[in-house]
Image (cartoon, rainbow, N blue to C red; front, side, top):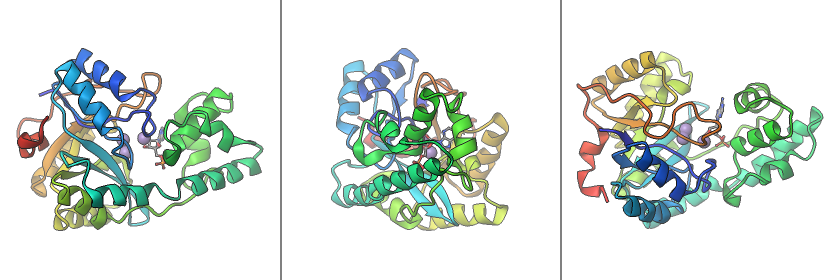
Length: 280
Ligand code: AMP
Ligand code: MN
Ligand code: MN
Ligand code: MN
Protein backbone atom coordinates (compact mmCIF):
# COMPACT_ATOMS: atom_id res chain seq x y z
CA UNK A 1 0.00 0.00 0.00
CA UNK A 2 1.19 3.52 -0.77
CA UNK A 3 1.05 4.71 2.85
CA UNK A 4 2.94 7.92 3.66
CA UNK A 5 3.10 8.26 7.44
CA UNK A 6 5.68 11.02 7.92
CA UNK A 7 5.60 14.64 6.69
CA UNK A 8 5.60 18.23 7.96
CA UNK A 9 3.38 21.30 7.48
CA UNK A 10 3.71 25.00 8.38
CA UNK A 11 2.61 23.95 11.89
CA UNK A 12 6.26 22.81 12.33
CA UNK A 13 9.03 23.13 9.75
CA UNK A 14 7.26 22.27 6.49
CA UNK A 15 6.39 24.94 3.92
CA UNK A 16 2.90 23.71 2.90
CA UNK A 17 -0.39 23.93 4.80
CA UNK A 18 -2.13 20.74 5.97
CA UNK A 19 -4.70 21.33 3.19
CA UNK A 20 -2.04 21.63 0.47
CA UNK A 21 -0.33 18.48 1.77
CA UNK A 22 -3.61 16.51 1.68
CA UNK A 23 -4.19 17.59 -1.92
CA UNK A 24 -0.61 16.73 -2.87
CA UNK A 25 -0.84 13.32 -1.17
CA UNK A 26 -4.06 12.56 -3.05
CA UNK A 27 -2.58 13.74 -6.37
CA UNK A 28 0.46 11.49 -5.75
CA UNK A 29 -1.77 8.42 -5.17
CA UNK A 30 -1.13 8.13 -1.43
CA UNK A 31 -3.62 5.61 0.02
CA UNK A 32 -3.10 6.28 3.74
CA UNK A 33 -1.69 9.52 5.09
CA UNK A 34 -0.45 10.97 8.41
CA UNK A 35 0.77 14.51 9.10
CA UNK A 36 3.57 14.26 11.70
CA UNK A 37 4.57 17.78 12.73
CA UNK A 38 7.47 18.05 15.19
CA UNK A 39 6.32 18.12 18.84
CA UNK A 40 2.84 19.38 17.84
CA UNK A 41 -0.68 18.10 17.22
CA UNK A 42 -2.37 21.45 16.55
CA UNK A 43 -2.52 20.70 12.80
CA UNK A 44 -4.34 17.39 13.25
CA UNK A 45 -7.92 18.63 12.94
CA UNK A 46 -7.11 20.52 9.74
CA UNK A 47 -5.24 17.54 8.33
CA UNK A 48 -8.10 15.15 9.10
CA UNK A 49 -10.73 17.50 7.62
CA UNK A 50 -8.60 18.00 4.49
CA UNK A 51 -7.98 14.26 4.14
CA UNK A 52 -11.73 13.60 4.44
CA UNK A 53 -12.44 16.24 1.79
CA UNK A 54 -9.99 14.41 -0.52
CA UNK A 55 -11.40 10.95 0.30
CA UNK A 56 -7.99 10.02 1.72
CA UNK A 57 -7.77 7.62 4.72
CA UNK A 58 -5.97 9.31 7.62
CA UNK A 59 -4.03 8.42 10.81
CA UNK A 60 -3.20 11.08 13.41
CA UNK A 61 0.53 11.74 13.73
CA UNK A 62 3.37 13.60 15.41
CA UNK A 63 7.19 13.37 15.59
CA UNK A 64 8.58 13.81 19.11
CA UNK A 65 12.14 15.05 19.76
CA UNK A 66 13.89 12.84 22.32
CA UNK A 67 17.38 12.93 23.87
CA UNK A 68 18.96 9.45 24.01
CA UNK A 69 22.66 8.67 24.54
CA UNK A 70 23.54 12.39 24.11
CA UNK A 71 21.87 12.48 20.69
CA UNK A 72 18.55 13.70 19.35
CA UNK A 73 16.31 10.82 18.30
CA UNK A 74 12.86 11.24 16.74
CA UNK A 75 9.89 9.09 17.75
CA UNK A 76 6.86 9.15 15.46
CA UNK A 77 3.44 8.60 17.04
CA UNK A 78 0.55 7.31 14.92
CA UNK A 79 -3.16 6.72 15.51
CA UNK A 80 -3.42 8.39 18.95
CA UNK A 81 -6.22 10.56 20.35
CA UNK A 82 -5.01 14.13 19.60
CA UNK A 83 -7.10 15.50 22.50
CA UNK A 84 -5.34 13.35 25.11
CA UNK A 85 -4.27 15.72 27.91
CA UNK A 86 -1.03 13.99 28.96
CA UNK A 87 0.14 13.86 25.34
CA UNK A 88 -0.72 17.52 24.75
CA UNK A 89 1.02 18.59 27.98
CA UNK A 90 4.08 16.50 27.14
CA UNK A 91 4.36 18.04 23.66
CA UNK A 92 3.89 21.53 25.14
CA UNK A 93 6.77 20.84 27.55
CA UNK A 94 8.92 19.48 24.71
CA UNK A 95 8.32 22.64 22.63
CA UNK A 96 9.39 24.84 25.56
CA UNK A 97 12.87 26.30 25.35
CA UNK A 98 12.94 26.50 21.54
CA UNK A 99 12.86 30.34 21.62
CA UNK A 100 15.75 30.59 24.08
CA UNK A 101 17.69 28.01 22.09
CA UNK A 102 17.05 29.99 18.89
CA UNK A 103 18.37 33.19 20.54
CA UNK A 104 21.53 31.31 21.53
CA UNK A 105 21.87 29.94 18.00
CA UNK A 106 21.66 33.53 16.68
CA UNK A 107 24.32 34.63 19.22
CA UNK A 108 26.61 31.88 17.93
CA UNK A 109 26.03 32.90 14.33
CA UNK A 110 26.65 36.58 15.18
CA UNK A 111 30.11 35.61 16.44
CA UNK A 112 31.00 34.49 12.91
CA UNK A 113 29.54 37.64 11.35
CA UNK A 114 26.00 36.46 10.55
CA UNK A 115 23.89 39.16 12.19
CA UNK A 116 20.17 39.23 13.07
CA UNK A 117 19.63 35.54 12.25
CA UNK A 118 16.88 35.20 14.88
CA UNK A 119 14.74 37.89 13.24
CA UNK A 120 15.59 36.39 9.86
CA UNK A 121 14.53 32.88 10.87
CA UNK A 122 11.29 34.20 12.40
CA UNK A 123 10.16 35.31 8.94
CA UNK A 124 9.83 31.63 7.97
CA UNK A 125 8.13 30.42 11.16
CA UNK A 126 4.47 29.39 10.91
CA UNK A 127 4.14 28.45 14.59
CA UNK A 128 5.95 30.73 17.05
CA UNK A 129 6.40 27.86 19.53
CA UNK A 130 8.19 25.82 16.91
CA UNK A 131 11.17 27.77 15.69
CA UNK A 132 13.63 25.14 14.45
CA UNK A 133 16.99 24.84 12.78
CA UNK A 134 15.14 24.44 9.49
CA UNK A 135 13.87 28.04 9.72
CA UNK A 136 17.43 29.31 10.27
CA UNK A 137 18.54 27.22 7.29
CA UNK A 138 15.88 28.77 5.03
CA UNK A 139 16.89 32.26 6.14
CA UNK A 140 20.60 31.63 5.48
CA UNK A 141 19.80 30.32 2.00
CA UNK A 142 17.43 33.17 1.13
CA UNK A 143 19.92 35.77 2.39
CA UNK A 144 22.67 34.28 0.23
CA UNK A 145 24.95 32.92 2.98
CA UNK A 146 24.65 29.35 1.62
CA UNK A 147 23.41 27.72 -1.57
CA UNK A 148 21.10 25.16 0.00
CA UNK A 149 19.83 23.98 3.38
CA UNK A 150 22.15 20.98 3.57
CA UNK A 151 25.14 23.34 3.21
CA UNK A 152 23.73 25.45 6.09
CA UNK A 153 23.45 22.38 8.34
CA UNK A 154 26.94 21.21 7.39
CA UNK A 155 28.63 24.57 7.99
CA UNK A 156 26.57 26.14 10.75
CA UNK A 157 23.90 24.04 12.45
CA UNK A 158 25.39 20.67 13.40
CA UNK A 159 27.44 19.70 16.44
CA UNK A 160 30.58 21.79 16.82
CA UNK A 161 29.44 24.46 14.34
CA UNK A 162 28.78 28.12 15.30
CA UNK A 163 24.96 28.00 15.26
CA UNK A 164 24.61 24.66 17.07
CA UNK A 165 23.20 24.74 20.59
CA UNK A 166 22.79 21.43 22.42
CA UNK A 167 19.29 20.98 23.76
CA UNK A 168 17.58 18.52 26.12
CA UNK A 169 14.39 17.15 24.62
CA UNK A 170 11.91 14.58 26.05
CA UNK A 171 13.07 11.25 27.48
CA UNK A 172 12.53 8.14 25.33
CA UNK A 173 10.28 6.55 27.93
CA UNK A 174 8.07 9.64 28.24
CA UNK A 175 7.59 10.03 24.49
CA UNK A 176 6.67 6.35 24.03
CA UNK A 177 4.26 6.51 26.98
CA UNK A 178 2.54 9.72 25.84
CA UNK A 179 1.83 8.09 22.47
CA UNK A 180 0.76 4.67 23.73
CA UNK A 181 -1.33 6.02 26.63
CA UNK A 182 -3.19 8.14 24.05
CA UNK A 183 -4.05 4.92 22.16
CA UNK A 184 -1.37 5.23 19.47
CA UNK A 185 1.67 3.32 18.26
CA UNK A 186 5.23 4.64 18.77
CA UNK A 187 7.71 4.25 15.89
CA UNK A 188 11.48 4.93 15.78
CA UNK A 189 11.93 7.51 13.00
CA UNK A 190 14.70 7.19 10.35
CA UNK A 191 17.11 5.10 12.51
CA UNK A 192 20.00 5.34 10.03
CA UNK A 193 20.26 9.09 10.67
CA UNK A 194 21.60 8.88 14.22
CA UNK A 195 25.13 7.64 13.76
CA UNK A 196 24.95 5.44 16.85
CA UNK A 197 27.53 2.76 17.58
CA UNK A 198 26.11 -0.80 17.33
CA UNK A 199 25.87 -0.91 21.15
CA UNK A 200 24.01 2.41 21.36
CA UNK A 201 21.65 1.36 18.60
CA UNK A 202 20.97 -1.96 20.33
CA UNK A 203 20.21 0.00 23.53
CA UNK A 204 17.84 2.32 21.66
CA UNK A 205 15.88 -0.55 20.10
CA UNK A 206 15.74 -2.64 23.30
CA UNK A 207 14.75 0.25 25.58
CA UNK A 208 12.20 1.48 23.04
CA UNK A 209 10.62 -1.99 23.03
CA UNK A 210 10.75 -2.30 26.79
CA UNK A 211 8.82 0.99 27.10
CA UNK A 212 6.10 -0.27 24.75
CA UNK A 213 7.33 0.96 21.35
CA UNK A 214 6.03 -1.16 18.48
CA UNK A 215 7.35 0.15 15.16
CA UNK A 216 10.36 1.34 13.18
CA UNK A 217 10.63 3.32 9.96
CA UNK A 218 12.19 1.07 7.34
CA UNK A 219 11.42 2.87 4.08
CA UNK A 220 11.90 6.63 4.57
CA UNK A 221 13.15 9.63 2.62
CA UNK A 222 16.21 9.54 4.95
CA UNK A 223 17.28 5.95 4.10
CA UNK A 224 19.19 4.58 1.13
CA UNK A 225 17.94 1.26 -0.27
CA UNK A 226 20.73 -0.53 1.65
CA UNK A 227 19.67 1.17 4.87
CA UNK A 228 16.07 0.12 4.26
CA UNK A 229 17.23 -3.51 3.98
CA UNK A 230 19.30 -3.21 7.14
CA UNK A 231 16.36 -1.85 9.16
CA UNK A 232 14.02 -4.44 7.64
CA UNK A 233 16.31 -7.00 9.32
CA UNK A 234 16.26 -5.00 12.56
CA UNK A 235 12.43 -4.88 12.46
CA UNK A 236 12.37 -8.68 12.21
CA UNK A 237 15.04 -9.15 14.91
CA UNK A 238 13.25 -6.87 17.37
CA UNK A 239 9.74 -7.96 16.32
CA UNK A 240 8.74 -4.43 15.39
CA UNK A 241 6.19 -3.41 12.77
CA UNK A 242 7.56 -1.46 9.80
CA UNK A 243 6.58 2.06 8.78
CA UNK A 244 6.99 4.02 5.58
CA UNK A 245 7.13 7.81 5.22
CA UNK A 246 8.70 10.39 2.94
CA UNK A 247 9.54 12.96 5.67
CA UNK A 248 8.41 15.53 3.08
CA UNK A 249 9.00 19.16 4.17
CA UNK A 250 8.90 21.26 1.02
CA UNK A 251 8.66 20.96 -2.78
CA UNK A 252 11.92 22.96 -3.00
CA UNK A 253 13.93 21.08 -0.38
CA UNK A 254 12.77 17.47 -0.10
CA UNK A 255 14.41 14.76 -2.17
CA UNK A 256 11.38 12.46 -1.93
CA UNK A 257 7.87 13.73 -2.65
CA UNK A 258 4.78 12.61 -0.72
CA UNK A 259 3.93 9.08 -1.84
CA UNK A 260 7.19 8.81 -3.79
CA UNK A 261 8.92 5.99 -1.89
CA UNK A 262 9.35 2.31 -2.82
CA UNK A 263 6.98 -0.13 -1.11
CA UNK A 264 7.84 -1.90 2.15
CA UNK A 265 9.64 -5.23 1.73
CA UNK A 266 6.98 -7.96 1.72
CA UNK A 267 8.03 -10.05 4.74
CA UNK A 268 7.45 -7.21 7.23
CA UNK A 269 4.38 -6.42 9.33
CA UNK A 270 3.18 -2.97 8.19
CA UNK A 271 2.56 -0.62 11.11
CA UNK A 272 -0.89 0.22 9.76
CA UNK A 273 -1.96 -3.40 10.32
CA UNK A 274 -1.75 -2.55 14.07
CA UNK A 275 -3.93 0.52 13.55
CA UNK A 276 -6.85 -0.59 11.37
CA UNK A 277 -9.38 0.63 13.95
CA UNK A 278 -7.67 4.04 14.17
CA UNK A 279 -7.86 4.90 10.46
CA UNK A 280 -10.28 7.78 9.88
P1 AMP B 1 15.45 21.06 15.33
O1 AMP B 1 14.25 20.27 15.81
O2 AMP B 1 15.28 22.55 15.51
O3 AMP B 1 16.75 20.56 15.90
O4 AMP B 1 15.53 20.87 13.75
C1 AMP B 1 15.59 19.58 13.21
C2 AMP B 1 15.14 19.60 11.74
O5 AMP B 1 16.19 20.08 10.93
C3 AMP B 1 14.85 18.20 11.22
O6 AMP B 1 13.53 17.83 11.52
C4 AMP B 1 15.04 18.38 9.73
O7 AMP B 1 13.87 18.92 9.15
C5 AMP B 1 16.12 19.44 9.65
N1 AMP B 1 17.46 18.87 9.40
C6 AMP B 1 18.26 18.23 10.27
N2 AMP B 1 19.44 17.91 9.69
C7 AMP B 1 19.38 18.37 8.42
C8 AMP B 1 20.28 18.37 7.29
N3 AMP B 1 21.49 17.83 7.37
N4 AMP B 1 19.86 18.94 6.13
C9 AMP B 1 18.63 19.51 6.05
N5 AMP B 1 17.74 19.53 7.05
C10 AMP B 1 18.11 18.98 8.22
MN1 MN C 1 11.94 18.71 10.23
MN1 MN D 1 13.02 13.51 12.04
MN1 MN E 1 10.37 14.46 10.15
